Image (cartoon, rainbow, N blue to C red; front, side, top):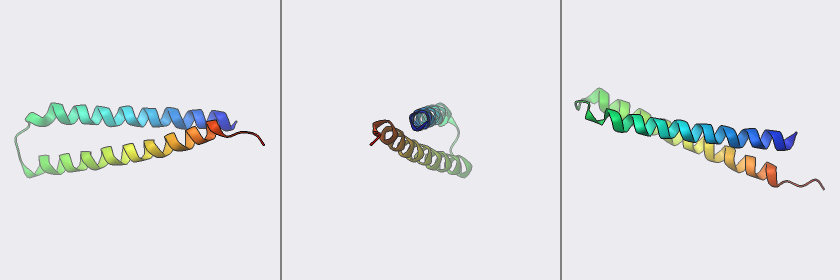
Length: 73
């Protein structure tokens, strides 16, 4: 059961990493928007979102790998 949870954590981390990459691609595609304060606020919010997604993904990867490496007594 612990191995299943570890694999699910790794899959979740992969999904969060893909989501962060999609946000980065969307930011690049929206770079042609006219410059205003709302666009700057939007970019700052997305950068914070990317940082949070990658931090959670890193945590899940570490827990998942530790769960897979764990041995029974």
